Length: 285
Image (cartoon, rainbow, N blue to C red; front, side, top):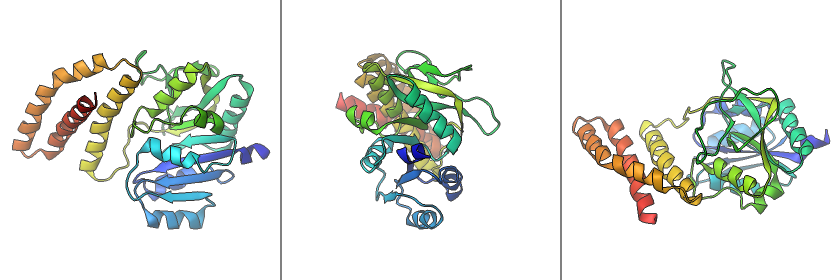
């Protein structure tokens, strides 16, 4: 079908297992696929290009982050549409095509995303408020396609031209909140963000693939705070978040030293990461 050739799937890797990416790629054999690996895993690349037809496979010597990686991939996309997809999000051909038809059918449509479930077929969160406007994280039971303020970047289909015209992802947002920022950009130009009822995907939330426990703690704890503060500063509503965090910092220092004394290095790193994120944002204010 011609529309299969009109979509490029772009995937960013960082220390995912071969099993994870293979499950993802098994659903994408009829699509153009571009992969960027932020962990520079040459063996994984060689194994995958033997098994799958991949349009382009980019290795980065250092982790350039989620946003910059997807922006780099987009520069190589030669189709009208791109599907931004996390490797742990499983969506097959039928459900991708349902996304494509939904995007084509709705006027002034910016982004479409699937309705997501976990491995136990329980509904998971995908569409909802922008963080500055309400609570996020609770799934909404739908009975049809629904406009939301935002959908998650685990699977979002959009026109390449729109992505480029809006400046793509904000590369200052290293790991988190870039999907919310992109959705906010679309809403600012009066384009809809839609969760498609008849497009299904399997996505488990909050399961990090980074094997080194200390690296995993730092990446999550540092960037969940730094990127959140930066996101709210972009929307000019960061002061409350910053003041709330500022009140917690003295207790974080105490907890850091206590855990360090008792050789609980994991918790020490957790609090140190939070402190570093706060100090970096404060310095950049």
